[in-house]
Amino acid sequence: MNRWIRIVAPLVLVGALVAACGEQAPAGDDGTTAEGLAVGFTQLSSGQVVAPDHAFGVRASSDATLTEVTLDLDGRVVELAPRGSTNLRLSAIDDLADGSYEMVVTATDSEERAVEASVTFTVDASVPSSGIGGGIDDDAVEREVRAALAAPTGGAVAGDVDVVAIVEARNVAASRVSFFVGETVLDAPTTVDALPSSGAFTRQRHTIPWDTTLFADGETEVRVVAESDDGVVSDEATVQVTVANDDEVEPEVSWVAPSGGDVVTGTVTLLAEATDDVGVERVRFFANGSLIDGTVTQSGDRFELEWDATNVAGGEVTLEAVARDAAGNRAVAEITVDVLSGFSITNPEAGASVGFESRQLLDISVGLNGTLPSGTAVTNVEIFVSGVSIGDASELSDSTGGEFYLLQWDVCDDPSAEVPGNVPGDRTLTALVEVSGGDTYFTPGVLIDHQGNCP
Image (cartoon, rainbow, N blue to C red; front, top):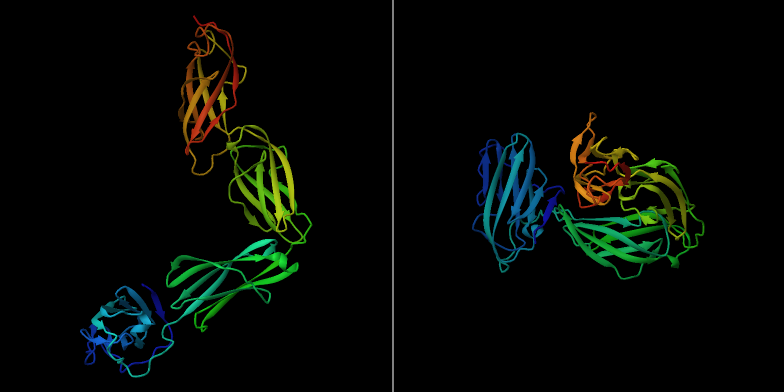
């Protein structure tokens, strides 16, 4: 039942304004004065029993400039224009049931002073209407309807399309919402969903299906008209679209970045350019046939997406940019890039020889190629020798502030050998990297030569 009502129409002067600080409110009124600022009620006093549409006045004055005058009727707030006085009826604030109510009026001025006055009264529907005889401004409470089209937003349309309008209303019910394509009224069941209020406005989403195949190809206008239940206030919104059901021309799409053959790692910006004779509906990006999640942004003919390349195994990856128009025509641009694993073992180098007489204590380090996506952090790095864990690496920083992970391994304590340190041959070093969110990545293996000469 709570509503916010803003009264902005010209106000009708009621009686004489309080001309100076300290002037008492007229007999039967409730008012307060303080420090050059006065506020109060006329035709409404504490203890009074009134009809639901009782007419009353609010008056305020300041020896400076009034900046705000508000009414609070048991939580129903009315903002008045910051003028000397206005007339209105209780029914303009809310449909009041019989019972007791408190109403508070507050005035502030340019000197940052504030003063308030209050009345407690009873509403009784059996009481004849009374109060100010005439002078009530029927437009004192501003009523407003707003309409906006959320879909389509322009461009080409084809097949079945949902036309979506957002309708907002203040102090009135926007009960009549009509949709048009050109001069034709869309005649189909409409779905209405309530949305969270925005300030003084109630909000609804109205959705109606549109079979574009019933309309000729070409440019046309989609229009929504929202009206109050009495037809007094209304608003409309329009958008130009192109119906393109007979469109058989494929879009054109090409890669801007990266280029075929590029070496990429970490977070990579994918950028494609797409055009169509009617309009590109969307562009999607794929890696090795799998859709790359994320939000594609558009600027003119260019479509962009941030790709976390650490989510794919290192090596050659086929990237596709797929453009589609409203009629379903599609085009594909394909490139191949070399993805450097997001994480890799940076020491020792492949083919290194280790053993009792050389490099018995081996530093195994793991580094990040590129950058991790925003909000992602490494939580653990585990080192393996030929598939057997030898422990977790510690996080360190290099001279440039870059992070890496280090574990020192005594090669004579070789968990992969039948007799530790005494079986010569190759060993494969790998690391399992875990990041926030629980995702894990194995680094590519690094093959080393174990001499097997430990005592």
